[in-house]
Length: 173
Image (tube, rainbow, N blue to C red; front, side):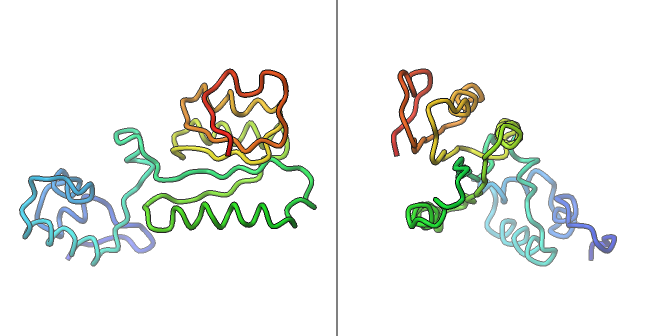
């Protein structure tokens, strides 16, 4: 039995020790890689279940370049518009589309310059794989900021200004 301090989360090393394998084998099982004997795979999966191990996606992201999360960013400042069925229907539809995947939906409200800056920094940090921008206005710099960060972005625009959307690849939702 692997000893762990109370209140700490299980580590990859603890899973490996309990399963009697190396860290690399545990990693291959977690990533569903080939080349692992079925009996070894079962031992690692049993150790994961017994310890309650959850892979640290933040640690995996630099290597795998996947956060398994998309952000639904709503920019509307007028709270009355959230009473319209459109917004709840979009959230429900996107949630339904992701329900059978490993991708997490993150809902964020971005209504001020400070929130916009914080959101773009969050997105650039590799915490999300893509962005759905809702209620984007022509003067909003976020589409270009996200494109500069290399994030796939879909815009649902509230208004189209002259030249809007020409500087980044986007799709009208």
